[in-house]
Length: 145
Image (cartoon, rainbow, N blue to C red):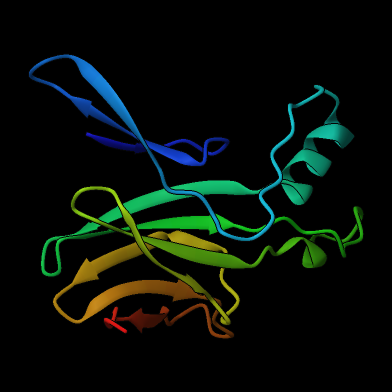
């Protein structure tokens, strides 16, 4: 079982047979900011906005890769305007041995990484759409450089 915790730059790999866990570095290459929470509502909002957060992780059985989502820290925002709270996203790419083999900064605005999925065509990530009747996706396919 591969786990991605929001405040940990490592992934945890739990072996259900032996009951052991191993950790592998899978952090973002740019400035990585993660501070402890203080507990007040305003502090919680600042914690979310100004800290790196690691999100979902997806396995790609067609390429034998893992894709880990990263929400980058945000410093240019208005605490009272939710429209300014959309964080930039990145994807960290790991091989089957959990070695970091790539990283990609998304240029598309999305707050919908939970709706991501993998197919033979690549990693599909839902993006913001002007029409609620249609779901819009970008598709990323890793290439070896």
